Amino acid sequence: GVVFTSVGKFAPSLVNIGANSYGQLGQGHAEDQSLPRLSNTAALPNGAVVREVTGGGGHSVVVTENGEVFVCGQNSKGQLGLGHNTDVLTLQVCSSLSKRVTKVACGWDFTLLLSDCGQLLACGSNTFGQLGVGEFICSSSVCFQSLKEPVVSVAAGLRHSLAVTESSCVYQWGTGLFSQAKRAVSSNPVPSHLNSKVPSLVPGLDQKAFMVTAGSAHCVCLTDGDLFMWGSNKHGQLTSTEPFLFCPTLLKRSLLGGEKAVKMWSGWTHTVVQTESGKVFTWGRGNYGQLGRVASTSQNAEQQSAGPLAEGGRQEARLPAEVKVLCGATQVVLAVQQIK
Image (cartoon, rainbow, N blue to C red; front, side):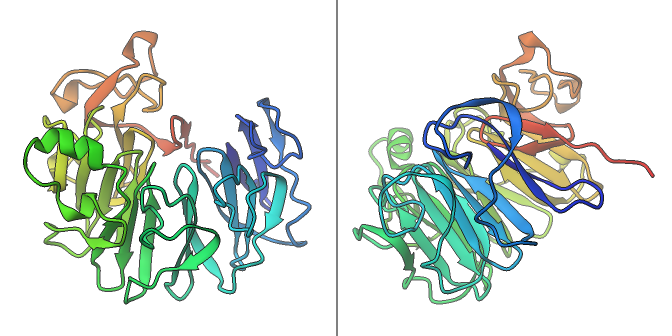
């Protein structure tokens, strides 16, 4: 992955490590890297400040403070928004954008971009309707016409998308969750928001939404201090005893020590939340160590260890427990506060 970092008085830089089969590390080649290296940022303007870095199955997107977007990696579905389908091995500016971009979300092979005026753009694969434009297929950025008001938060899963509008409504599109939902619901119809190729209002939220995030097949929504979750619970990422939740379900604050949730992240099959006091809780799949702690099978949250990861603890945690982390698809990064 590509990591944004800033140290002391030095300008922000990009450090990369890991899989690079499609050139998603932006180094000009397609060889994996086992050691951290500075990214090739020649395409970025002098003095450019990186605001955000995110990535999909094989592509990376960098957003600067000025709202410019730079992309590299796999582009077979047009997910880089460059107007062609050729992979790109070094960062290139996405010149087709006429708006300043403030937020990007990457699915497996598609990209969602949110402009500073709340306009939502999308590019890449639309096989499952994850672009929200019906059956239309393209290889350059497309403006959503079906959302009639500005968007304030956006998220992308494996093959589904989420957005929060200015009026705090949550919309979902993309049929990536349909097959799991169909198995869970048996003979009854699957709710429309799980089987729509255009934005569909998510039912059951009785609080104003501020933010959404998505795992490969699950969804999380943040309101004023509360979390609502739905989708696949195969690895305990929703804390439920049910295998699939069709509509938003409230997470009890008692599972977060009675505190309000203020930030959240999703990995592929795990969930990360930060509370008002700065504590960070993780739960879900832990067999790759992505929870940053021992993943206990205990149903008592107090019995779930938040200590160093042990070899035998790489399993699943179906209840939150505290640990200081940041979140990747299957990784976490420990956060250390410097005392001056």
